[in-house]
Amino acid sequence: MMRVSKAFGSVFAVAAAIVSMTTSSPSSAGGDESLIQLSCSGGAVTVTAVKPWHANKAAPWKWDKGAKVSVDDDAAKFKGDKCEGTVKAFVCNGDQCKGPIAIAVK
Image 1: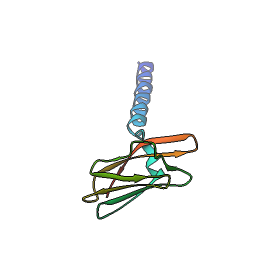
Image 2 (image 1 turned 120 degrees about the vertical axis):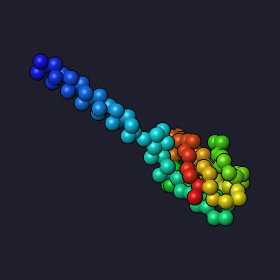
Image 3 (image 1 turned 180 degrees about the vertical axis):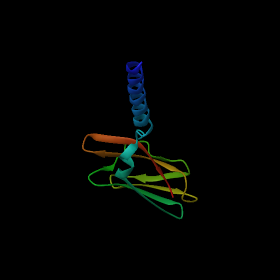
Protein backbone atom coordinates (compact mmCIF):
# COMPACT_ATOMS: atom_id res chain seq x y z
CA MET A 1 0.00 0.00 0.00
CA MET A 2 2.81 2.41 0.88
CA ARG A 3 4.54 1.73 -2.44
CA VAL A 4 1.37 2.64 -4.36
CA SER A 5 0.95 5.92 -2.45
CA LYS A 6 4.62 6.86 -3.03
CA ALA A 7 4.27 6.10 -6.75
CA PHE A 8 1.03 8.10 -6.94
CA GLY A 9 2.67 10.99 -5.08
CA SER A 10 5.62 11.00 -7.48
CA VAL A 11 3.35 10.97 -10.54
CA PHE A 12 1.29 13.81 -9.06
CA ALA A 13 4.43 15.87 -8.34
CA VAL A 14 5.75 15.42 -11.88
CA ALA A 15 2.36 16.31 -13.38
CA ALA A 16 2.14 19.45 -11.22
CA ALA A 17 5.64 20.50 -12.27
CA ILE A 18 4.83 20.06 -15.96
CA VAL A 19 1.63 22.10 -15.64
CA SER A 20 3.51 24.80 -13.75
CA MET A 21 6.23 25.04 -16.41
CA THR A 22 3.81 25.17 -19.34
CA THR A 23 1.55 27.80 -17.79
CA SER A 24 4.45 30.10 -16.91
CA SER A 25 6.29 29.81 -20.23
CA PRO A 26 6.54 33.05 -22.18
CA SER A 27 4.66 33.49 -25.44
CA SER A 28 6.52 33.28 -28.72
CA ALA A 29 7.27 37.02 -28.57
CA GLY A 30 8.37 36.52 -24.96
CA GLY A 31 11.30 38.76 -24.20
CA ASP A 32 11.43 40.06 -27.77
CA GLU A 33 9.50 43.14 -26.62
CA SER A 34 12.71 44.30 -24.93
CA LEU A 35 14.24 44.68 -28.42
CA ILE A 36 11.78 47.51 -29.21
CA GLN A 37 11.27 51.05 -27.95
CA LEU A 38 8.00 52.77 -28.78
CA SER A 39 6.95 56.37 -28.27
CA CYS A 40 3.61 57.96 -29.08
CA SER A 41 2.45 61.55 -28.89
CA GLY A 42 -0.80 62.86 -30.37
CA GLY A 43 -1.25 59.74 -32.50
CA ALA A 44 2.27 59.88 -33.97
CA VAL A 45 4.03 56.57 -33.21
CA THR A 46 7.77 56.00 -33.56
CA VAL A 47 9.19 52.50 -33.09
CA THR A 48 12.94 51.98 -32.82
CA ALA A 49 15.00 48.86 -32.27
CA VAL A 50 17.45 48.58 -29.37
CA LYS A 51 21.03 48.42 -30.67
CA PRO A 52 22.52 46.24 -32.13
CA TRP A 53 19.09 45.41 -33.59
CA HIS A 54 17.59 47.48 -36.42
CA ALA A 55 14.17 47.81 -38.01
CA ASN A 56 13.51 45.29 -40.78
CA LYS A 57 12.27 47.62 -43.51
CA ALA A 58 11.35 44.71 -45.81
CA ALA A 59 8.85 43.26 -43.30
CA PRO A 60 5.09 44.01 -43.16
CA TRP A 61 4.97 46.47 -40.21
CA LYS A 62 1.40 47.28 -39.12
CA TRP A 63 -0.47 49.35 -36.57
CA ASP A 64 -4.09 48.32 -36.08
CA LYS A 65 -5.17 51.91 -35.21
CA GLY A 66 -3.16 53.91 -37.74
CA ALA A 67 -1.30 54.06 -41.02
CA LYS A 68 2.36 53.40 -41.72
CA VAL A 69 4.22 56.56 -42.72
CA SER A 70 7.74 55.19 -43.19
CA VAL A 71 10.16 52.42 -42.23
CA ASP A 72 13.94 52.64 -42.49
CA ASP A 73 16.81 50.96 -40.63
CA ASP A 74 16.50 53.43 -37.75
CA ALA A 75 12.74 53.56 -37.09
CA ALA A 76 9.20 52.83 -38.20
CA LYS A 77 6.73 55.74 -38.08
CA PHE A 78 2.96 55.65 -38.01
CA LYS A 79 0.14 58.20 -37.77
CA GLY A 80 -3.24 57.64 -36.15
CA ASP A 81 -5.91 59.45 -34.16
CA LYS A 82 -4.63 58.59 -30.68
CA CYS A 83 -2.15 56.43 -28.78
CA GLU A 84 -3.88 53.05 -28.59
CA GLY A 85 -3.82 49.65 -30.25
CA THR A 86 -0.95 47.35 -31.18
CA VAL A 87 2.03 47.68 -33.50
CA LYS A 88 3.48 44.57 -35.16
CA ALA A 89 7.23 45.16 -35.30
CA PHE A 90 10.03 43.33 -37.09
CA VAL A 91 13.74 43.65 -36.21
CA CYS A 92 17.04 42.14 -37.35
CA ASN A 93 20.56 41.77 -36.03
CA GLY A 94 22.86 40.45 -38.73
CA ASP A 95 21.12 37.43 -40.26
CA GLN A 96 18.89 36.87 -37.21
CA CYS A 97 15.41 38.42 -37.58
CA LYS A 98 12.44 38.45 -35.22
CA GLY A 99 8.81 39.36 -35.70
CA PRO A 100 6.07 40.02 -35.65
CA ILE A 101 6.58 41.42 -32.15
CA ALA A 102 3.31 42.81 -30.80
CA ILE A 103 3.83 46.05 -28.88
CA ALA A 104 1.00 47.91 -27.13
CA VAL A 105 0.71 51.60 -28.03
CA LYS A 106 0.07 53.72 -24.92
